[in-house]
Length: 349
Image (cartoon, rainbow, N blue to C red; front, side, top):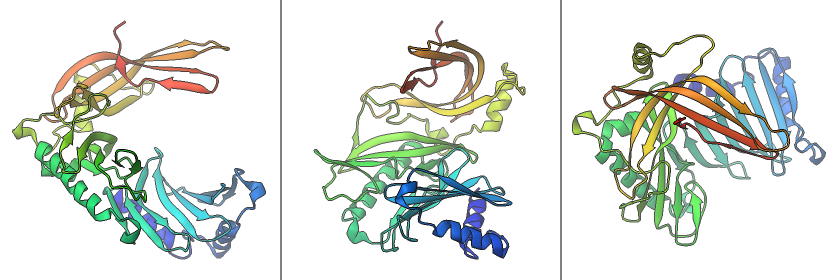
């Protein structure tokens, strides 16, 4: 995937965004992008369709967005421009699951680079440290957070299974808070870190490590969050997950999972939290789930619900062992202008 993203970036920024188009298509794309869209066209998207790609543009109150879809790759490229200019505000790639990937760039209004965020590596690099007075101290706190993961799970686990979620991490003082990459002037005293966790090279799950530390790097217990703290892992299992998706699917089939065209298999790495104010506060589990039943209760003028029932095959990702087959369900309820989804919960009916 990384090689494909790098190749796509090269194509995207070469030959004036031509993507290998002929001169007519190249000029059409340029003209489409240069149209500033006046204020009467706010929130009114329009589309340019070419042989192997599609561009959609839309004006918002402060920026103009152009999305580029290319038939040869499963990524969508977002370009945000400051309104009434050709100056970029932000660029970012999204995959087919609408998850940001690759490198995103943020720009100042004069067109100079503000910062780069690498979603694949979990990196955030600013161009002008004077605009981020706590940048160095934040870097020191990030090293303390990494060291904590290394202590609990091993250096190889941090390197091969963890991606720091820059946008999911926060800083706090007694009175204020900010996203990690925001510009702020208060002196932070508490730091919230989130990391994505990879089961294997093809299966990545968002924000499955979460914890807070104080200014000295000490862990701050929390018993209220769904994801918080660490798992106590035996020394001989630290460093990597022995389980991968292919092995889990094979074992699940041996224990009754039936794979067919009408039954989609859902996978999820989960954090089963003890919800205790302790350092070791849960365990990782990998689920393979198959939907077996849907129950709907439709109330036209009230709150409707849909209960989806699943057979779930649970695994310990550290040693690769199958734990159990169990019944679980998710409940989606909705009414006019509102809705709520539970996620997977035990089905005790």
